[in-house]
Every structure is written in structure tokens, then in C-alpha cells.
Amino acid sequence: MKSFESLGLSKGLVDSVLQIGFETPTPIQEKAIPVLLKGNRDFVGLAQTGTGKTAAFGLPLLELVDDVRRDTQALVLAPTRELGLQIANDLENFSEKFKSFNIVAVYGGSSISEQIRKVKKGAQIIVATPGRLIDLIDRKAINLSTIQYVVLDEADEMLNMGFKEDLDKILSFTPETKSTWLFSATMPREVKSIMKNYMSDPFELTVGEQNTGNVNIEHCYVMVQEKDKYPALKRILDDNPQIFGLIFCRTRIDTQRIAEMLMKDGYNADALHGDLTQQQRDRVMVKFRQRSLQILVATDVAARGIDVEDISHVIHMNIPDEMEFYTHRSGRTARAGKKGISIAMISRRELGKVKQLEKTLKSPFKRMMVPTGAAVCQKQLLALMHKVREVKVNEEEIGEFLPAVYEELKDLTKPELIKRFASIEFNRFLDYYRNAPDLNLDDRRSSEGGEGARYSSTGTRFFINLGKMDGMEKGDMLALIDDVSGVSKQHIGHIELKGAYSFFEVVDKDKVAEITNGFQGIEYKGRQVRVEATERKESSGRESSGRDFKRGRTSGGPPPFKRGNKFSDSKRKRY
Ligand code: AMP
Image (cartoon, protein in one colour):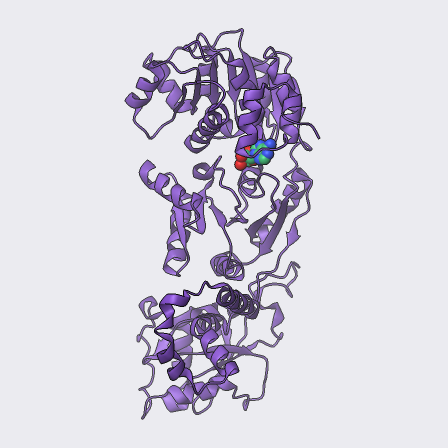
């Protein structure tokens, strides 16, 4: 393994890099730095994000640019403000103890006059997003005629974002004699055309196989019905209590909606998308970087280029239309040699896209099952117990309160105490997941497949804790089911009314999940209605649910359910 020194960098720069904590060069640094240091050749680096490409071009740039001169010698173009700022920041850190540069970042969404002022002071290196740079060129606030080096970072992203014309215009303002260094994760036609039009005989370097993903990313998918994607997302989050994750949605509206739903459901989540002001976006990013935000829900554009360490999971609410987007999304995890998981939530229709991705990335995608309710409960319980074990006890301050606590609990045995203590937080999960259906779709396309495949072919029998004692007639039951779940009477088979409970059969397997989901959180006369799928035909199957119901009943029983007595959303519990 080579050292930074052996690549031809000067001692001052090597010391700075070592001080930052980079001990040995990454593969792209090892191969690119010696070539770029010569300073006289165009260069194309085909590399994924997270490979260390900023230092691969940044270190040679800092060696080649003269800090005694005040004119602008290097221009780095990046697709987004976040990436631009990151590059400028990295360059400053690398050069802090080496040379005295004025590195200026120019990007949209921030005061242009302030940026013009900084540029005018003499910036040897400008890092820019294409749109804002065009503004500066149009205002004649920037002189690109002295440029010796142009770096196009994440070139494929810039082109994806529609910056082709801007790039053409910018490059036309730079001298013919400059060297152009282009970095891209993928090599679509548009990038090839930039190479053809603006570069001569570039040195081409591919790190890893072209289009292969980062090997440290485990690519998975879960297959669920479209309407089950949100519940499946929640299960994945609940199954990973330590998650530090990024969730991608296709549109700004979806991004905002998913983030809001998660927030309402008690997750530490927030949104990042283009409808937010720059200030709002900055605030969210600061929270995420500091890890005071656990889950960031973002659009492709807003999250491009963000480099946040240790993202454990990238979750895609759908597979993006552009394959490159998938690479960029999943590249947000498994950075700097760490491991990460990328989970795509797909409907059966999207299975073909997974196969296509497998081919493009030359990497297998593993089917991951959405965890069962029981599995999630188990994980949460263990996480809770781990917290108990790890909690830092403030011996001094808690001391004076303990005698009263011991007194209050003195009758309880150790197992009793543990059980009760664990239940305080755990009951919430138990309640929520008690009747949780299997959300995984069968991967066979046949009529046996689908959400209801695990149920018997003669229909699915449900237990409900309402019966004759509640004044229920068959018509009332049908009306209730329709009102609550939207499943109309033609899908309902045999109804067996008992005293405190009943059974009804759902003929159509596709409707099973609608029933289960529809009844979640429904209250009837202030009492929680419980509906459970059961394969037991035996009506004496009065599981604990029946007993729970009786215990909860008000004396005399509630009046019969009437059609129009809407079980509206406002009556649904929020979990
Ligand atoms: P980049 O691909 O430039 O965005 O870099 C990805 C991540 O790897 C960043 O967090 C860098 O700080 C880190 N990194 C870059 N080069 C090295 C290196 N030689 N050793 C350790 N970490 C590095």
C-alpha cells in the first residue's frame, strides 16, 4: 500500500492530510494523484461517490495552484450547493497549514452580492454550482480567462439536472489551454459527449468496475403492496432502533408527506426538498449531521452530494426511473470503507427494475422480508433492555429518591419488577403490532400469490369483539365493515353472531389487509374494536380477545351500530 508522500505530494500537504486522519490513499487517490500532479493532461475518473475523489483532485489542485497570485486559476463545478460547500470546506481543511488560499464557494440560495465581494477580493479557487456561476458571468463579476484547471465533479449528476447548456456556456469562457478533470459515477451518453467536445485525449481511470456499486453496500428489496409501503417502512424503522437513515421519495409532496407521517407517529424524522427555503434546508442538514435527527426524508435533488458519515440505511420508497439515481442514492451509505444497507421498497410491478439494477450494478439484490410484528416487538424489547443495562446512573442525585422508590416496589419480586418495567414502554409496540398482518407479497404471479395467500382458499375468518350483546345484527356488521375498511358486502361471506363477539368471513383474499388495516385504532363507543384473522373454524375459539372485550364493556352495553355512525379518521388512534 502506498503512502501519500510516495504519490509526489509535498510534505506540508501530506502532513495536513495525515492530521485530518487520512492515513493511506484510497485507490482513486493512489492512481489519480500522480497523473493529475503533472498538471498537463485532461482526465476522466469514473468513480462512485464515497471513494475519496474530492482529495483525489483536491490535493493535486492545491499543489498546482499558486497562492501568491490572486487571479482565479481553478474552477470546480458541482451539481448542488451542498456538494459545492463540502468540496470548498475539504479544500480549506487540506490546505490550512500548507498554503494561504482564498477559496470561494458560489451557489444559489444565498446572497449573490456577498459572493461577488468575496470573488473580487481575489479567489485562486472557485467552487461553483453551474446556475450561480452563469449569474456571475452574466454580471461580469467573474473572470474565467485565467483558469488553468476545471474540475467537473459528479458530471453525470450535473447533466441529469439539466445543466448541459450552462456547462457549455461556462466552458466556452475558459481558455483552450486549461486542463479539464471530469469525475462521474456513471458514463451516460451526455458525459461522453462532454468528453468528446471539451477534452483532448484524456487519461481515463476507472476505480472499481464501471457502474458497479460500492461493494460495501448490501442491496436489498422488500416487496409489498403500494398501500403497505408506509406500514412496511415503519416496521423496518422499528426493527432497527439504532437506525441513522436516509429515505428517498420521488416527489417533494411525497417527501413532505412521509416525513410528516413519521413525525406524527413519533419518529425523529424531518424532510429535505426543494420547496423548503435555504434556511430550512440548512437547519435540517445541521440537525442530521449532528445526529440529533435520526431519519431524513429527501428528494433526489435535495440530497445529492451530501456526505454525512455513518448513514446506516438508505431506503427507497420506490425505485427511481433513472438508474443513475439509484447509484447516487445508495452511495450515501457505506462511505469511506464502512458498511451500509440500501433497501428498495417495491411493488410486484417493480421487480423487473430490480433485475435491471442487478445487471447494471453487477451486484445481487437480496429479498428482505418485512419483519413480522412479533419480530419487531422482540427487537424493541431487547433494545429497551440494552438501554436499561447501559444507562448511566447518577448515583449522587438519584440517591435521596431511592428509599421511597424501594418502599413503593418492595412487594414485587425481581421477575415481576422486570416484567412491569419492560411493559411501560413495550405495551405501545405490543398494542400496535398485536394483529399486524404479514406485509410481504408472494413473489409468484399466480392467483395463489398476493397479500392473502397465507389464508385458506375458502376465505379468511375474522374474529371481532362485537356481538349480539352490542345489539349487532348481520346488516349492522356488514355496514360497520364497509364503513371502517371500505370492503363492501359482496366480499363478505358467512357471519356468525355470538354474544360478546362474532366471526365473519372475507371471501376475497385481496381484501384481507384492508380489513385488518381498516379496523386498526377503531373505537366503538369509547372502546377499542379488535379484529383478528383466525383460521380456526371453531367458534369456541374465544381467545384472550373475547375476554378482553368483556372486561372492557360498559354496563348495559352500547346501543346498536347505525349506518352513518361514521368511524371517521378522527376516531383513529395515532400510534
Ligand atoms: P469523497 O468521495 O471525496 O466524498 O470522500 C468520501 C469520504 O471518505 C469523506 O468522508 C472523506 O473524508 C473520506 N476520505 C477520503 N479520503 C480518505 C482517505 N485517504 N482515508 C480515509 N478517509 C478518506
